[in-house]
Image 1 (cartoon, rainbow, N blue to C red):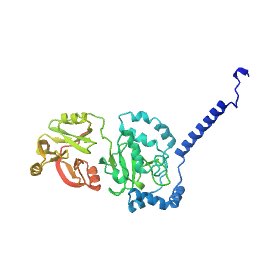
Image 2 (cartoon, rainbow, N blue to C red):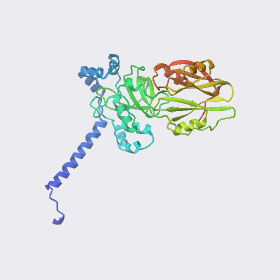
Image 3 (tube, rainbow, N blue to C red):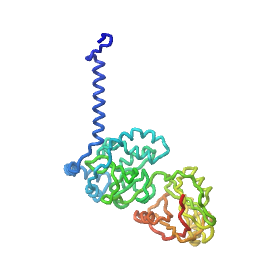
Image 4 (tube, rainbow, N blue to C red):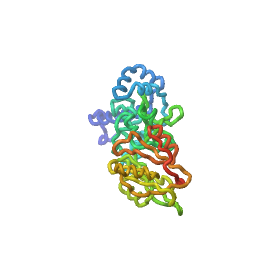
Length: 371
């Protein structure tokens, strides 16, 4: 070999570069191992048995009850269903998603960054189920509280049959939930299962089925409010949602729907189709809470106007054969949504299960709208 190109293998710089290369390969393989090597069911059970008293103290000290602790410890072992290493590779591009306007993808991709992290309170090296939610939502600059019983109060109730990416799914009844996960699409969710396990992906199944779901993110379907498909003698009733206030708004005026969308409300589509003639449905406004109430009862309208609400006129008309249900939230305070209106019996029943009260049929609609 030409002496000009000879390299002294013992030169300090060569030794240093060789050492750094070896260290990089070791760290990379260690990270990959942490993400793909999940504990077995036997290992999880043994860990929980060996650390039972410590685990109990940690759970109770966080503010959970004895009942919730028992439910956590009785959670079934869930085998990871995906090749986590691929999710880890995908998550490295999450900065691109975080700059996107797609908040749902931002939450999901941020959560995937923590795949393989062990369950525990030493965050972010360890994460509990509620803390995984907290970290994932930071990608959208949304601050969520800790504990499932606090997180279950956020956003709005959504059907388990109509989940979107980023929705939170909970186990056990409202007020005593003990576990939360983030829906990632394709009937799957990401979560920190339990002590002795790691953050992983699982599918919704009847053996460990969630009880209800909440949607925190804006529910904009990507469409602009429009009256496409509206027929003669019909009026589209547009449904919008204000994430900051936690309230829905319903309007038959296309211009109002478009204006609310421009100032940040999420457009959820046409709630139902009303006739242009029929019994009046009145709209009244509470200047203190910012809430609107809709009623077909002139007596109710006059009563709440006397109590300080503002009458805003006839919003639409009642007619047809489809019942529109009205629900009342007895736990609502401040500017929280206290009334909700829906054609969907599944949505109605889910709200009732979570503590809302059914006010029965408020009025009737002509049909659903396909838009």
